[in-house]
Length: 257
Length: 343
Image (tube, rainbow over all chains, first blue to last red; front, side, top):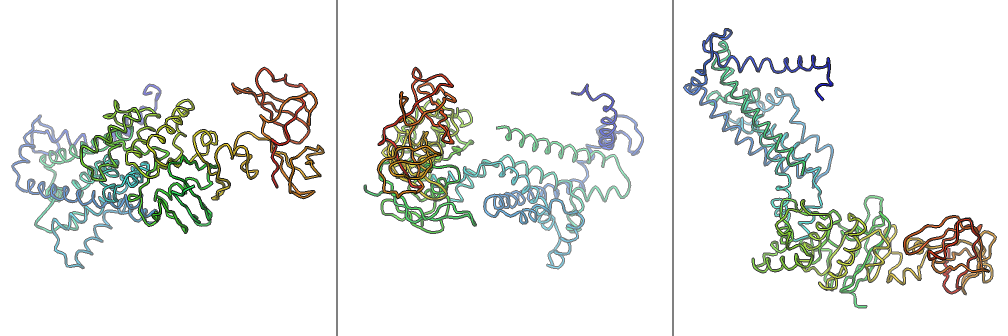
């Protein structure tokens, strides 16, 4: 296949370079020995060590992890139930569109809307408001993925379970959920990565005393890029990439069966 | 006939589309009953209504004098074998079959004993730990069957159970179904569009069209005495000649064909129905024409003869008696074998 590309290889590699050069520079510079952000002075892993020594970053990391885990949990439960409802109980194109659009809302609009809502409700901003906000937009992604899987799933499976004497709830846990498990896991992993590095919504809906990691990074970058930031960004990047790969494989393997 | 399952005035429509039209049917205990008809005739809707997977607009279904309609699908003493088999791919063969018994919360050893016994009946005991995806089409079909009969339902409903199998396996499974039905002593209601399948397997057949039952009869009756053109046309090969009654003959495209005694008045439109195997080749016959085509089916040969009736006459013949294509054939049949229907 590759050999047939001919001269098209040139634009292909050009585009790939364009896409990955910034990331390559980031990873490369995270191993820079000196703290001068733009000059290379030898290989070192010292910045990775210094990350662990920074209380700000550790607190940010802890906050982010908490938000990502709880928001993912909520998003998976809500998104899966919504998808099952849309696929099995209330077939309506309009309802489906409404359920799925939060995924493609501009972050900024969603963030401002959430901030306005929380303020009007006199809800104190903090990690819980970030969790609610993240659960909201992540649920739309989970719904989209699970809905796709349910679409392929023969609905006579659930009818067969009912015919064999199972209740609606029993059928959901014994038949529906195991059948859509790959999609639910993929949705959870996607939610987790989306929440992990989400900045705009977290920035608007968070309180001042509980910064998440992206907010910590943002406040550090305001005074210039430090090699520490490069190392941190590299770690965040690798985590996200790893999770996305797992999610993709999980969906693909099961689809072949 | 003692009525076991009694369906009365059942109706169901989807918007303007009528699926079942004021349908009544009586089915006896231990009967192997077939719902036969072209696709879209309402037979599957009726089956799903019996299973409780489809609501109906009006009417009544009584099973052993118990009203079935108020019961949800999971409380009905009937089980359905799905056309797609609907096997649970994340469970083993054994767990698929045991599923319904576990829902009844039976004691563990009873579940094990009944499941093993049914798996033995369908010859799948050796495959009980396999996943359904590792089975052949015929084996999947048997798992689906085992999963339904292990519940010992009062009625087993089968939705086109053999349609996904190739011809040879299908013939074996027809025998298997008949054996199981006799052994289990369960009433079977089978939905099919394949008239040969219904004829070979069922005790009685309800032929359906456009949401209505056209005729309920044994396979032999249905074949010998079709009540209407639809039945005569749907069941088996047939010659159906349309014409006008004229004395004790039917005028069909300038030919006068003799008819059995009839109460139909003169000039009434009527159909003369003659089975291909009732027509014989003779030296001096009722009709004569040129042999257009001769189709060999292994055991018998079907001859297509042009007698100038506007349609080819079908005649069954044995292989060694079949004339050469192009030969002139004289046809005759016993007057009482033919059937006259009002048109």
